[in-house]
Image (cartoon, rainbow, N blue to C red; front, side, top):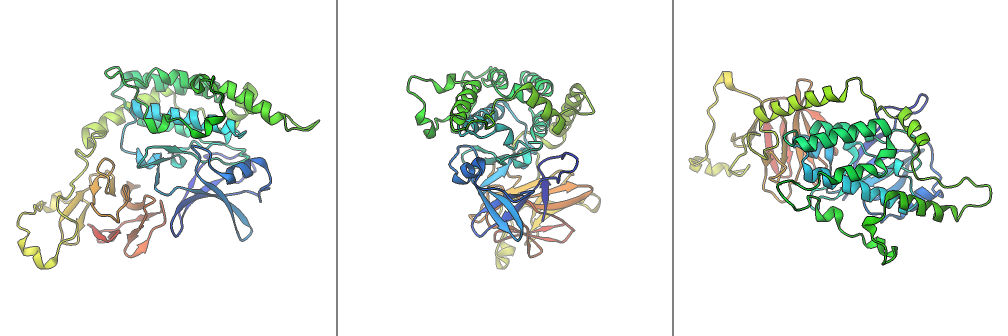
Length: 430
């Protein structure tokens, strides 16, 4: 089973928290093992098990042998690390993401949850492929790195470098976060992002309706109060007043708003500072961006990403002689590259050091399979350390390599001649 680390660093003496993907009969999950048996009577566990908090993945605790696991339902969702591995992050995406960040932090505080327990690592932030809504993991009583520095790195690396104003804004956000930490993220970052949400060539706000729609759970806000005018500081203050009203004499008061002291603690836990400066990082990222655009058509939807078959992946063997209209590429021995073929030998995709996402959603997939049993983003074939690997992308019906089913996000090394089965379709890796 493939395990992906949520937190790159752990304090000395602590066990590194890891996540793993589990496929159930009807649903897919990401689960995190508790370092000790949880006291489910505590408030954060109770409120998360109750569910219904907008922006958070559904949560439950299960016990296996002597271990306790937190299960999060990720059915029909894709982590953004995979979803945007080959696509630049434009103004709309940045606006949508920071709007979702503000909304989920507000929700956490409204329910007396600590926003610093939200996980921001790109491999554990999910987006619904239909609605576009972001979903986040909340780990109760987290005392470790929440992955925000990894998210900042991800945005810096994938931002659309053709938009200079956007790049300047993202660079400024990263610099201020590096200096001020969570204090900056409590409110000011959202004001800074406001300036780039509107495209200079389009007066329409870029943030999508599904992220900014009104939350029905906010019905308890007085009618004479404009929710959009309520700052996160106001919400912190009101939530602390409510929470402290339930505290007994001598009990430690509830504290939610980040302070300079909290920020110093976070800096000790997180690997915010990098060995190379941000100017150097952006320079290298720009060079990488230019190379990908020139070589692979990066950011141009399906153009230049490989050969997509115009025929069905399956054809009746008895009718092969009548397929005179199908074009087969004649590749000489010296020009032969790693490729994928259909069962009938039709060329589907040619690799040139890149990766290929297989699915039925044309906007996301490099190899499109029009089949009801195929997920929007079903599987991925990619190059790692000189070898090609097959990875299931949390598909509904699973991905098979030589008859063996892969678990969600499990990676298996491919050899020439291996069979890849996607739903009822067979593809051969040559």
